Image (cartoon, rainbow, N blue to C red; front, top):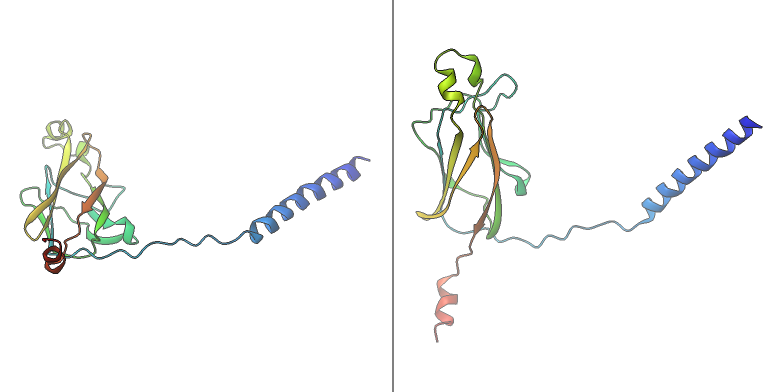
Length: 176
């Protein structure tokens, strides 16, 4: 009797799983309709200023990563060597921004701070930061700073609103 009950229960479970799979397969497919985004016009320039050197650590080979998540994680900067904090990192003639909201993901490695003997205690007590400035046609659009706790990598997502630039013809028509 028990084997028969086990067989019936297993058939009920497998039958319900099969019925669910057929139900899900019969549902209409979701089509993600994204309105076409207009590329933002202008000359974009991104400047990153670090408070301490960017360097890879034992678990992460990347010292600096900047990408655009909305565009399939298009990489703007990917460096694996030590980057000095003395001079800003500049990306000139930047493309890929659209009029409206844009996301920018930034990750800066701080290396193995606690393992070297030269002023490790002094560096370990300081919070790390990266200042992000985005310019369009030499006009500052964004000036934000990402912070991290001592010894932690700096990482974060910035949402940047890039306003659309109206053409001169449209502005002349509306000046009646």
